[in-house]
Length: 138
Image 1 (cartoon, rainbow, N blue to C red):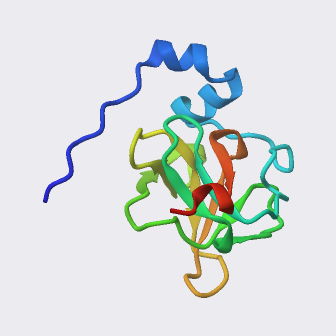
Image 2 (image 1 turned 60 degrees about the vertical axis):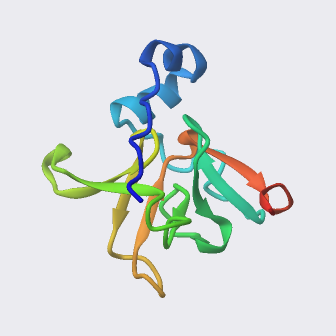
């Protein structure tokens, strides 16, 4: 079965609903200062979702302290939760991570994470929400 493309959020509605920082990060590929976000040192059990569309993105079981000041994960919650794109901004090549459902910028993924994946998904807190495990159970 082929997945149907998700409708893209209306930009004017997003400007009104999101904070200026959330909009700048999600829709203009910005970033927040390190150690400033709500989730970088967060340790509760649950799921992190997209602040724009609500899609589940990362699970707390894959979260680790990278020392960078941003929430870091070894993998997304599913292989199709995020998309990856070449980013040549800032005079370097990186891999940008976006929400697969709404195409919002989340952060970047780097090949310097711990086992088992060796990846570090470095994600901006401002574009994440959190639901405790008991609220995500079926």
